[in-house]
Length: 235
Image (cartoon, rainbow, N blue to C red; front, side):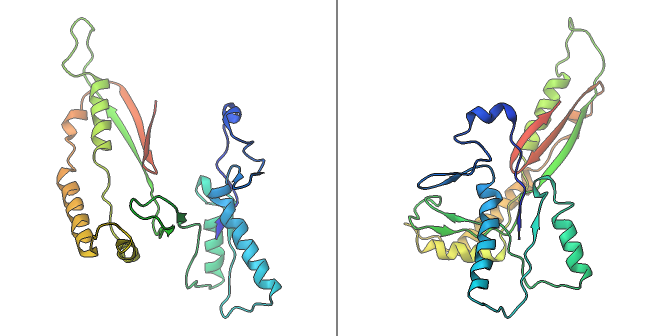
């Protein structure tokens, strides 16, 4: 499973690129271009692997389905969603789905010098919040102790400081056990689970935003979005 589309390029940034984004420039060590990692590498790798197996007259014991969407970067509504619906209508029940997933990380894990095949089982989502501050009207000669901009700014800070908790899923703790032997210090998996539990408990205790601070009357509003761990404001 892979996707053929890539994130679009802003025209004003074209001069800042090391190579033209859609040139596919080949150097001694890299292929430079938009989508080489997300997700053209996986796409081409899958096709090359299938062609290689076909040239060797390989006959699989199970059926393989190659699914390549064209709109993953904008939600996948006409790509992956349609593919899944089609397979479901055909009565296909896949034993597993292999998508772009993880990667081979080099020099990413502190203390681990060998390449590490990362296990990625979940995807960061996004949350949209509409914050409205209403306060009484007034005059600049007698400003209130709190104004709408300050109240709204504090609300955004509170949201940013109260992230959703991380959670450990089964294969990840197995990966950490394997990594533990490669670390310069020993960190047993049971200790990792305890640390993860304590982190979640700490988050649950701190997740308290006081609504009274934002329930003022007047007309200032802002939409706040968080996507893949990055926040931005839209006025």
